[in-house]
Length: 223
Ligand code: SAM
Image 1: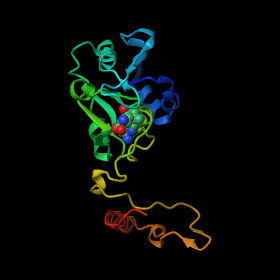
Image 2: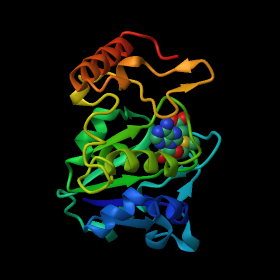
Image 3: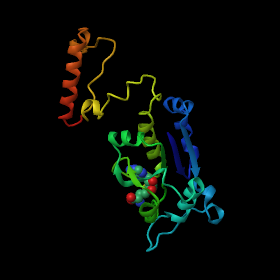
Image 4: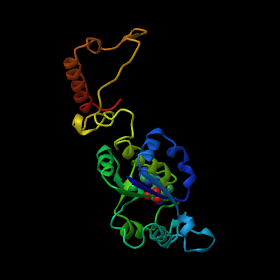
């Protein structure tokens, strides 16, 4: 996968780029590029934002600045890249979204700041917008890392165990249900024993129990 992130704070991604599943993918030929809006802004002194028409608090990321960044990266034909803006008002990102995006060859994530993007960015420059939840962060960088993490771990070679991302919470393999509970040693801690079935060595029975637990969790409100 080629993943491009447009941001005012490329240095915020240093930690993320060092994560094992990310370095695994980079070693296997995936590419992650960071683009700083300030480096391509057509305005002087690195300006990227402006006061809102109609007045009000805060500054707005300018449409010409975002367009210039995309132009510098892709030219005017952007048809081969799926461009998504991070926005609290976007489509709420879920496991199915992660699966969907993991099938895209070339993905771009645009991080906003301040009051967000001039609405013409959303209307004309992107293919969609994504929210990581109905709350407001100070900028799109954390949201971009959340999206990138969930998407990249789906790709072959990201995780040590290839089967890990197949059967987990909300996956197709579990019919969209939460995953079943996990336990490890010790078998009893204080007076909290692990379910006996897991110690039985009966793989079929363990499988049935796990699927039943998963289905049960789907019908319950989260704790
Ligand atoms: N004024 C905007 C509003 O009320 O909808 C909020 C702008 S927010 C302070 C600045 C930037 O953070 C946004 O442009 C977006 O890129 C990012 N952001 C904030 N919350 C987000 C969320 N829940 N999901 C995705 N991106 C978010």
